[in-house]
Image (cartoon, rainbow, N blue to C red; front, top):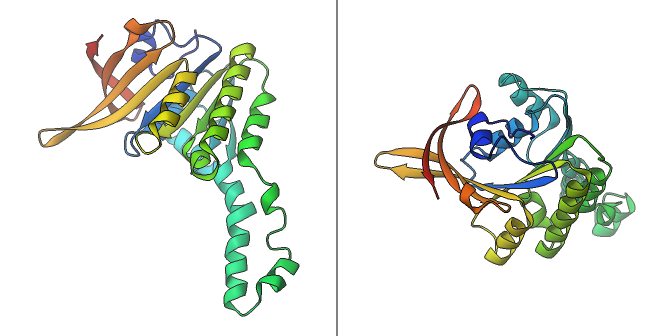
Amino acid sequence: MPSTGIKKLDEVLMDGIPDGSSVIVMGTPSSGMELFAKQFASADKNENAMYFTTSETESEVKSMLKSYKWREDISIISISTQYYEKILAKELEASRLKKEGLSVSDIAKLGTFEGREEINFLETLTYEISKLKKNYRVIVDSLDFFLERYLPEDVLSAVRTIEAHVHYTKGLALFTMVKDIYDKRIENSIAAVADCVIELEVVKIGTGFENRLVVQKVKNMPQKIITLIYSITDKGITPETISRIG
């Protein structure tokens, strides 16, 4: 079965994740979700990998892959770069022009906001993934960008569409999102769509901290709920011990 990129996690999942699966990784901003996503993306050199990033540039992702000696021949789509170039840059320019004395109508005539309402990054995400047909894994890091800009119901619908496509084409999908900041109904609904739900958390223990990787859900396998204690090394996320199986 396809690897998660983390050997010990593969072992407790019975040699990886089945083809056609969708994985949700939830956690705090400091837990290493972005690193998990890149490690997952690089797990199999024989698969086509497409990586959507909403917080980094393409060069930043490639630099991180190179620093960990992970595969670099993955397709990287920086939604954050597209958002800046197509939306924020125009808004900043409009703000500058307004500050310099141009009226709103003058700015509109210059076409500063041309095409603004036509850009829907959520639709673009779904469309690009729909073009993938076989032997692939797709990573969306993260859903937070979309949850902050679109109706939660629309994001959930997009996740369901992507999950269905991945299931029927026997691909793999991984989504990341920060936990405990959205309505629980939406968070639980997104988790319900996934075949596997993993939480990364940083817990204060005495005067130090402990990193925990909790497998909250594996479809049709409730016995697979486990907790791994992990550290971040030059190999990436590296589980050290299994603290609980339940």
